[in-house]
Length: 400
Ligand code: PLP
Image 1 (cartoon, rainbow, N blue to C red):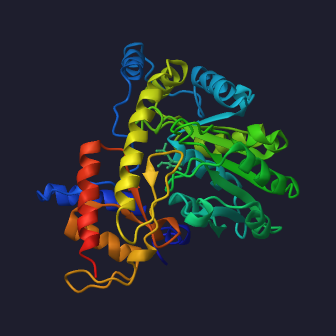
Image 2 (image 1 turned 90 degrees about the vertical axis):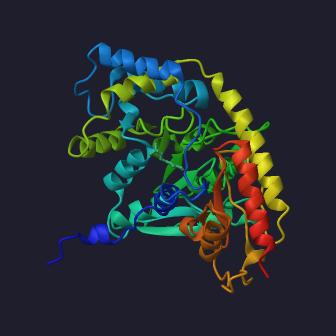
């Protein structure tokens, strides 16, 4: 009898976290590697959020809370959904969890059964297919390459739906591409979904607040109100408020789903950290204007990285509307040889070459289900990004 369960055998460790630990190992050995693999903002958590946490500790908010969130945080989330998305939820429709990943995990574990299908556009955030497989479900991957702006088209969605489809997972702006759906694009996808009332929608809006230029963020339950009753709108504090370590994610959705998620959570993590919940309440209720300055910095970095990568022969880097990632297509580099005589036959070989020769860490496209490409997180200083892109330029120019 095997010690490890079959369910666990169906998943792999997160490839983005694996690259991050390779970088930490190299740095510990004194290698000057530039890590562009981690998916977190380099900005600090705002002081007013930290202060709220310290105050919560002093006020003795250090005990168990309601399983799926304090009344204060749920009220702040209700207000956030109304303010930012014009979505009306009651507090009974809100679930607070230990990070956005936990929100998605709870929702999928609570609903997906053996044989259920979950439609996942690729490139996708690495955890979606694994969580679906953990549940015994089948990920149905719909490829959306650079030529279609890394966004699925309505006819692709229509073709992917079967009687076994349980969910469509829609992540905008996207990790790993930064691509973001406009309201019109969401409406067109919504029209397909209206023809298939058994399909639920998981809108992963983790990067809602990180968008550029005149792009206007929209979420599907807002754009297609008829889908409100079968949409789980997922968001969190990790990215917008630079709170990745605090572990607060949340969602708004139909009461029966929210209740099911709470039941699962009551038998696993119980409540998210009480102090992190107080901090999240302050983040959502507090001033939001600092987001603009941070976005302006991200936008400069995006432009810098896109322009430097597009100078490389063989790399095509689309300019995304949101998040802090670029996902250059590297078809033009596949088949080339490194100065050491190795063939770059996959994007993984390219990433190994860039790590070994250029000392730049990125994540290969195969990890996100669409090759050949790689993901760079530009959540670091312009100085480091310039140095990293110069190294990539030199390393790619040396390929024959
Ligand atoms: N969804 C997407 C698209 C993400 O990129 C991430 C984090 O990288 C998450 C969800 C989960 O965020 P959290 O760190 O709050 O678990």
